[in-house]
Length: 217
Image 1 (cartoon, rainbow, N blue to C red):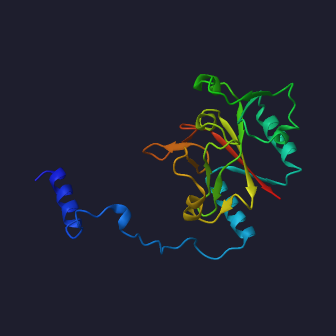
Image 2: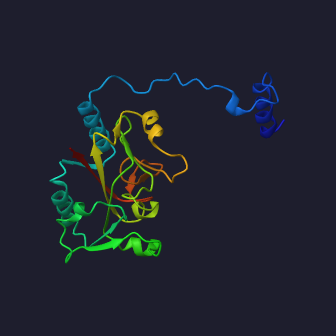
Image 3: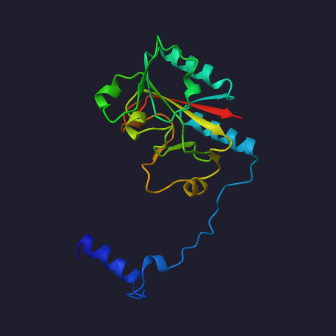
């Protein structure tokens, strides 16, 4: 018996007591699993997010709305950035402290090719939601996030998270906020991979440096 026959036999046994006319939408699914692990205050949830992001080697910063423009300018200056790509819906004030003479602002347009983006120093975006328990930032190509490619090609990504409204405890809570039809990108730290000897190499599938800014209002 082939592997294919074995798999199909197991499927048939699993479906033996299911009526042929039954559709998946007709069978209720138990959703009684834990929605979060432990009871945390909002402050503790945000602290957990920051801790797990740092564990994944993201660089975490905290500020308030008034300090955000100055922080973004400082981060770009620290990278020696000469250009930054911006989603169309990014709030205008976020880059108000950036010297336009030193840092070229590049709008996210369909004409931008991966080759063009590879020459860009940095990208600044918002996010859709952030998951504290996993240290994950989720992008859904919203107006302040732009197309997926602008967060995968440039080597430096600054991602702004509004606290506490964009922070949830768990993945189930995050899924409730996301539309499955949108292009979702789940980010846990900068892009990295390891070879068979576990030597870590960063920047393989996306930005080598991920800086997350928690804006606490």
